Each structure stands twice: as C-alpha cells, then as structure tokens.
Length: 209
Ligand code: FES
Ligand code: FES
Image (cartoon, rainbow, N blue to C red; front, side):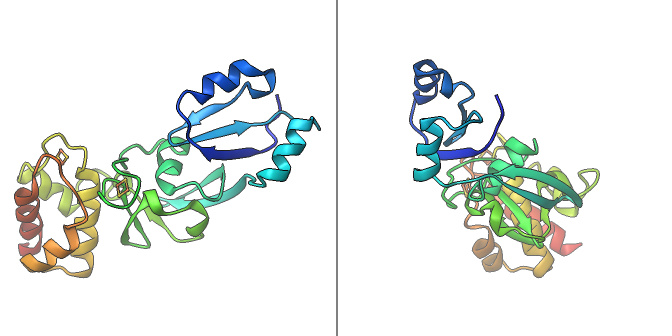
C-alpha cells in the first residue's frame, strides 16, 4: 500500500476496528489519540475520489526546530504540537492532560515563552524554536530542575514537566517574582496531587540565588 495522503476526522470509539474489517481499503487505518488517521491506498478508486472531494486535508512537511535540532515532520497542518512531539518525535516528557489549554500539563516553550502545546497547531510554529522538558538543560540541571529536586516537589509527577516549563519561563522574564507574580503565572498549571506550596517555595529559592 502506498501512502498518498492522510485525512483526519474526529475520534469515534471502536471505529478503527469496524472500518478495518469492513473493507480492504480501510486496512492501515490507525487511531492516533483523539483522531483517526486514514492512510489511503494509491489509485483512483471511487472511495479515494470521494474522500478527496469531501475532505481536502493533505499532509504537509515541516522542518521544526526542536530542542536545538531541526526535525522533519510530515503531518496534517492542524495537528497540535503536543502530538507532534509525543507521537512523531517520541518526546514524551510533554504530557496530555485536558487537550483544551486548561491544565498546563502540555506546556513547552515557543521562542522562550510558555505555551500550551495541545492548542498550538504545527502549522503555526514556523521557524520559531520549541523547547520541551527534554531540552530545557543538557543534564537535567536547569536551576528550576535543581530546585524541584531540592524541595522534593513532585508527587506522582504527571504535571511536573509542565510546571517546570512554566516556572522556567516565568523566571526568565521575571527573575525575582513576588507571590502574586508566581500565582498569576502558575495558576494555569493544575496539580492533582496539590504540590502548589512546594512549587512556590522552589520558584522562590531559584529567585533568591
Ligand atoms: S493538555 Fe494542554 S493545557 Fe491541558
Ligand atoms: S505531582 Fe501529581 S499531578 Fe502534580
């Protein structure tokens, strides 16, 4: 089967297996998180013609600057960077929490500023550098990461990559943040384990150094 294009439609539970069994043309359907990605066979079948008419989405190629390296990605322009990082580039430190920019688990830096990668389409990145938790420092020794260890911040750890990326962005623009500054900047990062007090102490300790 030759991959000629990729079409994304909203996720429907169990539809993957149903399609795959329904007709040989659906072999190669795979579920990617909240989307179905259809890999169409080459040729001019009536189904291909129909899909090309009703769903004109096409794959585009992006050369993204991720953690200081150029990484090539072929995907639908609407793909959120969260899934580009996790599914295409295997950078799984960036986490999925809500998918609607409400929890901060997916926070990365775009041009040094904290952004929610779940709401950042790959087509909007262009030549702007993206930094993930894997690229924040070479050996995990960014001052914020060291402070996190010193203050034993993490509990389950799920939210902490996003917390660290938000804190690093805050301290870069405001090296001595007040309590109110920290609250305002970190309020979009949710921690179900309630590590907020230790997060604040860790941020303050970096500011004091
Ligand atoms: S997954 Fe992006 S903000 Fe929650
Ligand atoms: S440490 Fe568990 S969600 Fe934050």
